[in-house]
Length: 588
Image (cartoon, rainbow, N blue to C red; front, side, top):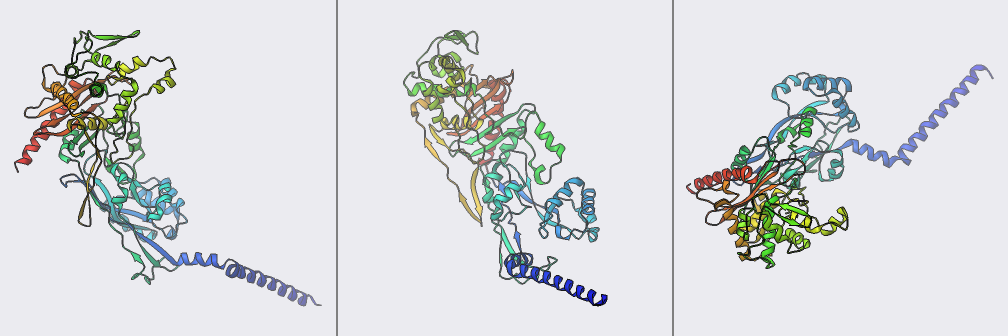
């Protein structure tokens, strides 16, 4: 056999071997794994495009806007069309003032979503759009889309804000139509009513070629229109809300709640300092975020429902009502004489008035806020009685307002004291402290407001709420909320009402700074010692009546000083404003 013949046979064997390998590979692809790769091919051939609904807007009780949708031009990238990642990232970074590494990271994280648009930059001004579009012929992976962004009329905590969906949220919600680019409610009403506001996502099934271009075969039958979200009408009055915000001291954190006594509707919901939710409409600069997080006054804390504090003397209505309900005291019962304090065991508990108040009945004890009266009263019932009665009156208990994260507050039990201070703890000494709203007891401003609204309503508790009605497809739907009669007798509540009136309108009452001509103002001051600082928390809570009780309120100033001198004047101002607004509306 010649060398040429040998070489020819070797070549034939090699060719046959290569052919055999190809046949085996084709068999594996078409027969063994044919179904698998068929599905992959089909997915490359068919695209499902998600259509976002228009998010519902939010208005106040008079249909004035609180949260609206505004057009926003956003920049997207299609990973499957990227020619050079670094060049694209550099262009976007320089032209839109975005961190280069951040853009590279987003592109890398979405490198397998070849034909899914990925959001890069939000809310771009029109001038920048025009200049950038001239250079897009070099970057076919980039495109602009006009979409919506949320615009908040004024800073507040109750609406909350929206933000880009997180990876975890996307995994949990993608079956509901959310995409990797979706925005979602992150806090407040935006989160609580997310399902109502967002509407329902639609979809369109597209048949595409290898480049992702639609053949438009299915456009007439395989699609589902998006359903726009519902608009929400709140119980808030924008005018009162903004006025109260304007009169709050700039250097003292605090909260004010104003509530309709007859319905439980929240008319004003102010927590200060606040923050501008509009900063969340696009990526927040790190410096802005750090400033928010490091601010010692914590502007993102909603003090209305997330802040819990010792109530001080605004709590004294609870032991007073409990004493009346149990028959321990009557309207004219006078307890131990106040000589500036009271000895309990080996400890002397002081009254705020060192010279003493003398012997008082329950009306004057509340009017002058005498501590000794309540020290003595608390010794006549068990700690468990006070704890249960407190919760029955929705203090240290969630009200169920339509917001997430409401704090419950706290009232210590006998067992809690034993667990924390040992079995020989002096429960009597703890109890007298709790009776004046001091010690371990914690409440929220909303709970206090709700309690005083119940007193104004003669013992009918109505659930505080922010939603008034829903508007969807031009149809208005009202929501209904719980109400229940609390256990106190009407005649006992009327005694408390008389005491609250005297506190504001009687001679030397501690709430005189809240007196308003032409309005019957009822209230109670409180100055709660604060273990976090040397200055007391300032409280003033109560209600205002015209022909009948109309609004209840709670004013709270964190480390603000005395309730009578710091909180009560704020109540006076917004009651005067509400009164003038009320008269002007009646005259229309």
